Structure formats: structure tokens, C-alpha cells
Length: 466
Image (cartoon, rainbow, N blue to C red; front, side):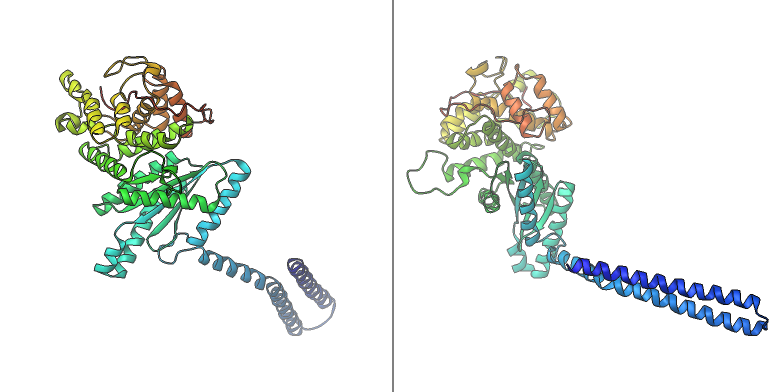
């Protein structure tokens, strides 16, 4: 109603201005016509013309004032309202979007998902060591630290999504139309850049995705649980999984204990630290393997144990000499034999640590689907599904990650290579599941038929090994 009244007032002002201008011009024209016919002196005529001109200018100024008075208040009010809304959604210290903006945008993304079936991912981030900086160097240094890493986050995220500062050292990132794998890749890139910048671990990241009808509180809680696990286990990034939920009342389901998870994380860090150029390889393989398994319908304890096996699939490389592990040229035959022994060493390490099922899967993660792999030459379903899954996850991460002995491939190139070896080196169903996960438009995009929950003790191929 107010908008209609303002429009009518503006129209009336314009009409008044137009009439005033027309009247003034008409009067001037009449005056000039009369002057041309009248017999009068030029001084008098000039005086009359000057007075008429002054009248016209005055009328024009008044008409413009009328128009401005009709327009300015509404426009000024709108501009002020827009400024206040922007300020209400902006963090004063970093210039990022703030807590309020995050929840508004998350609600909008959920509404879009509900209407169109779109997907999106969330990342929860905590800066490590901010309290120590505030305590030892003062809060100004702490604020500078926050601003520095806010800029790093915004630069790395770019056009993929939006970064929000939601608390003192807490950030959230909303990634529309992105699946978990894209978010995990981005998280590792952020971790690498910030760690290099600081010379040490700079932050912890938890990731979750929305592909169904999860509500806002559930998604934020999932991201927070994953973040807590990343901080506790000192991992670069942890995606949400059901095993992170606190145990409820009733009998505990047999799975991986917190102590075993900590041991697995420590062993994985040791492996990645030795093999330069494969930072976070173990964690990425673990999360990819779990995601592929979910596409196959696996769940519960089997998923958690598969994650441990993926995290520790290369633990036997601890026994491989540095000269072989970091060699940039092709390995000689004897060197290949030493490298291939890592699966047996890994089996023994895991079995001794109490990971009996996982030891069997790791033992065979270089078997090939056509029987041409090692150590036992198993083929097809003689290789456990867990091993076949790890093989595809391992190979994909190895191809898309930086390595000293070759250039990394794009996602599309890596998928093309996996498809070329599908049915020979790799299980075709695992290749299809991976393609669906990383957003390949050629992939069917629907979950595969579920498999039995009973675990078998076999596995398949992967990474750089000959």
C-alpha cells in the first residue's frame, strides 16, 4: 500500500513539473511574438526578455526540486536499508559473511535442495593454537592471525562456495552443488596451503554433505562431529560418518575402538610423512573407499573397518627403503620385488595391532580383477569387495595427486584411465561408483544394489606400485 502511494505522489510531481515548464516556455514564446510586433526600444525588450528568462529558470529549478522531493526520501531509505542489511551479515574483523548470513544461506540452500534435488557440502573449520597466540602475544596478534587465515580460506574456496566466520576461531564453508569428495579435496588443499604458510598444522576441518532431506541442525552437528574427530585424531580432514555418533544406550556394536582409531591415524601420518609427495594420501584413500562402499550399500561396522583398512593400506611401506620409495625414475626388477613386499609387511603390522579383518584386505589390495595382480593372483570375486574398493580409491587418488615420478591427472583423465582398465585391473562396479561420486555426468548417479553384510577377507589393486 505504501509503495502504491509513493508511486502516485511521484507521478503527480512529474505532472506538476511538466505543466510548470510548458507554461513558462509558452509565456516566453508569447512574449517574444508580442515584442516582434510591438514598436518599442531594444533596451525595454531586453529587460522584458531577461525577466522572462529568469522566470523560466526559476520554474525549472522548482520543477526539479518537486521531482527530487518526490524521489529522494524513498531512494535514500532503500540505500540505507541495504547498507544496514549488508552490515548485519558481515563479520567486522575479517569482512567475511557472519553467523547470521551462514544460517540464512544454509536455509536457502536446503530449500533449493528440497525443490530441485540438488546436493551441497558443509565444512566446519577451527584454527589451531589461537588461544596460545592470544595468551603469549596478545589479542591484537590473535586478531591478525584470524584475518590472515580468513583471507587464505576465501582465496582457496574462490567461486566454489562461501566462507563464513561463525565464532572466534570458527569458520564454516558452504559449497553448493558439491559432493563430499570435492569438499575433501578442497579441505586438503586448504590444509596444505595453510600448513606451508605457518610452517606447522594451522587448522582442523570436518566435512559433511546433504544428499537427502537432512535438516539444518543435523547437518551442522554432523560437520561439528567430524571436526571434533579431526582435532582429536590430529588428521587434516575428517568427513562425517555414522560411527562418529556418540554411543547410545544398549549393547555396543563391535567395531573400531577409539584407541585403535588413534593408532591407525598415527600410523597413517607416519606413512605419509615418509613418502614425500603423497601428503594426506592415506586419508583421502580411506574416505574415498568409504564413499564407494556406501554406493554399494555397505554400512555399520563394515564401513568403519574399511575406513581403517583404507587409512593403513600402505602401512607396509614403512619397511621400504627411502631410495626406492622416493625414486623418481622407473624401478628396477629387484626394487619392484622390494616394493611388492609392502603388502605382506602391512598385513603383519595390522594383524599384530589387532586389525585382523583389515590385515586380510590390505594383503590383497594389489590383486587385479583379471588375476594378473599380486601377491596371490586372485581374480574376480576371489578378491574381497573391500580390496576391490580400496584398489579403485588408491589408484584414483594416486593419479589425481602430485607425485615426483609423474604429472598429476585431471579427474576426467583419471576416470578415463580407470574405465580403460575396468574389468582387467579394476572391478567395474567400483569404477562406476567412483564416477558417480566425483560428479561424472556419464555416471548413472544411483546407488548400486546392496551386498551382504558378512565381510570376506580378500582385496585388489592400486597406486604407484609396479
